[in-house]
Image (tube, protein in one colour):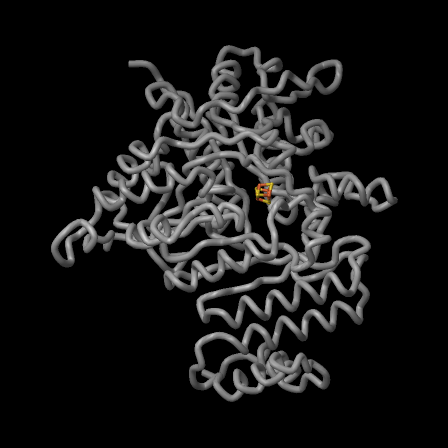
Length: 483
Ligand code: SF4
């Protein structure tokens, strides 16, 4: 019997517990008869370096998927330790950061190659080539050669249906359920996006292309996964799940056909009671849905959507090439409220040169959306010039210095803080607004009720001065709990 070669895949530590679907995709694409895939997740390990070192002695290669920001720090630690132990071990990085900075990533001596964009086909060929001893010229990769760094031809996005189903046996699914606090399975049904938002790296990496699994296949895969893992919630990790209305209808029908339990008589009474699901929805796509389609999706289990709004200012929306309107956002919100489903509407403020009027327009829209349903959330983020986007290119032209090394990129994570485009006074004002709006519009429950009433009073009058309640809550928060 042929000995299977070991391929080690590592997912770096991060502050969220989404299942590592990118590694799952490349690990599942390898021939199981020939490769023994070990997927290690730094978020599940007491000592991630030790866990990886325990596997690398007889490994063929080590692959990692790396996001820009803090995960780079952990990925670097693991790559350097593995390379120190096995200098001959090919260490390959893929994921967003390696797709955006194919060559720059290779300035780090512990990394030998990077994979750009969709990884399945590229990684399979790469692993085969590593096993064969010559792997420097695989399409979709960038590699270090004796003469320097070699960028190989890009690989076009391939039809998602041509890849095998993801092998969830590579993951400790129950441990993710525990960390998430619910039996929620992450699943991806499509890759890429047709849109061109100027703050987003997706158009750069996937060249505005999209590919999605066929509804029948999604139904089949999820039925098998549900039988095995009994998830009660399903989180679609697609960038734009609602790309085609007919596809959404067909997926909802798959769920109803495979999971529906008749609560009454007739098809209209049937509903999917096995699991709920969540997905991303663009406001313009929502405008193309109708109540009938939404009702079908809800019957199939849809409980919440995420609709990126980014700004309440039409001028800003046009400037960032978001290709949605404020009216479409409001119509989408009304549709969600009518059908009793939740929605997350993320906003971004603090773009370079953004006027006070523009920020105020966003805050006004946040307030309007929050007041429409207790099931609506409106997180507000500050603009960060993440690489690969048109706006980042513009701010770099204007003199903003992006990090240069991987160590600097590891510190590039200003979650909760703002860039140099937001004055301290403006930051303070936005933070006050966020605090009171967070408390004002949720369901009124004890013991938060008095704070909620004050917060709502303030929001209704746009009065955020002398924020004593905010100071009090922040003062109390860091105190240790009395046991
Ligand atoms: S923000 Fe969303 S819709 Fe816009 S380009 Fe990126 S993935 Fe596509």
